[in-house]
Length: 190
Image (cartoon, rainbow, N blue to C red):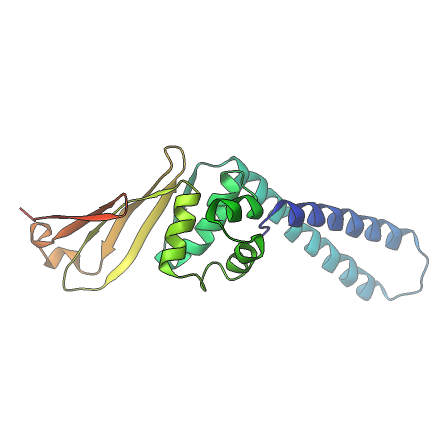
């Protein structure tokens, strides 16, 4: 994944170099078995396609306002995408957090797995992304937890919770909690 403008620019230049390499290869008269030549060209074309897809994803991300995720473990990746979607550089985000840009680069390199919960909260606030969630509890494990980032209203919300064998448990018996502005509010089940 392309994570910043510098990587974006380097990738675009690399694509041009690879395309030029293909053109030069077709024009040279080096004696090489056709299978090897075709494999070489195919490998380069595959690299170009991968890089073009990354370019496309970065450009699309720069235009998006809704970032759905399917698993809570994807929060780090969503923070990176939220920064790109908000049009912030790593340096600008670091300044908003009172950090050095190298720290943001390290966090993003590991998709924020090394960041503490307090630091993640700082990053979310600096990105001006609100986190809100509603979670239903029961005696069975949560199978799928779908979460989405709505950057139109700059709101983070859970959209779907699928629980294994949910039909065996009455929905009215689940307590639920709502997370708004970083505070829990307990709602009694009716």
